[in-house]
Structure formats: C-alpha cells, structure tokens
Image 1 (cartoon, rainbow, N blue to C red):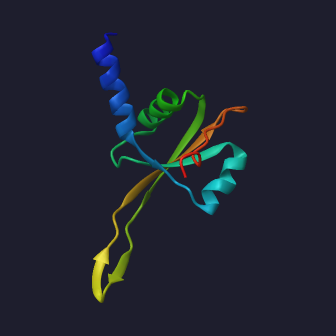
Image 2: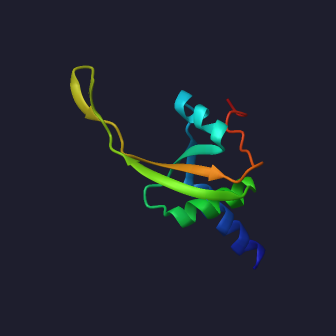
Amino acid sequence: MKKSEQKALNAEMCDIIVRPVITEKAMKSAENNQVTFVVRGDATKTQIKKAIQGVFGVEVKAVNTLNQKGKVKLFRGQKGVRSDVKKAIVTLAKGQTIDVTAGV
C-alpha cells in the first residue's frame, strides 16, 4: 500500500470516531474493559472496529452500537431539538486499555 493510500485510510479512520464519551456511566463500564465513543451516523460495526484498532492499536473483542434520538428542549422559551447521536460501546480484549481521560 502506498503512503498516500495509508494516509487516506488513517484520515478515514479518524473521521469515523467523533469523540469519546466521558460520563460517570461510561467510566464505570471502563472497569469491564469497555470504552464508549460517539461515532459517525453511517458507520458500521466493522468500520468502527477497524478504526479503533488502527487509531489506538488495541485488540477489539466486540462492538455494540446505539442510536440516541435528540431530545426536544426549550432554549430561551423556543422549542429546539438536540442532534441525533450514534454511540459505540467497544469491548477490549483482556489486558488492553484506552485512556480517554488523558486530554481532559
């Protein structure tokens, strides 16, 4: 594979992963070798698995996804809708870790 093709592949992998989810629930699941990420809405489980393995260099055991629908909320008295979000809960192999709180 050429360097330009490799760079394009790495850029695509980085585009699939939007950001890690850093909540109390997500940190509690980290005890079970699970890490939660917000991913692109059209990403498949296979693409997510390859992206996590390529970007972080870890072995992924399983990927579970969920589509979270945006809530209707009031913003200064006006109705607004939060964006829909796709989340991926990635289960890592034993002994593998990803530190998502390093940049916080």
